[in-house]
Image 1: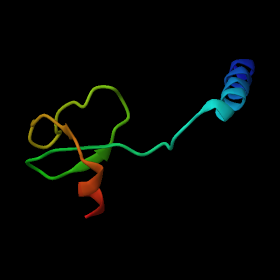
Image 2: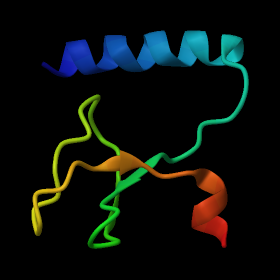
Image 3: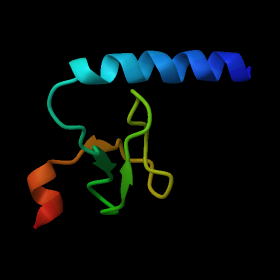
Image 4: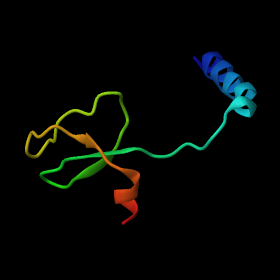
Length: 64
């Protein structure tokens, strides 16, 4: 297990110089409850409080 972690870390280090742009946190939220959470998986899911479908939040709306 440790050897696998070392290999992944080394592969990431070697590829880091080829990365371009910046990494930004993406948020999802419930339009009804106005809750927000960081996107951590490809599926947005539904709100735990009201059951509404979660939506990707606009980064401009987060800074307002």
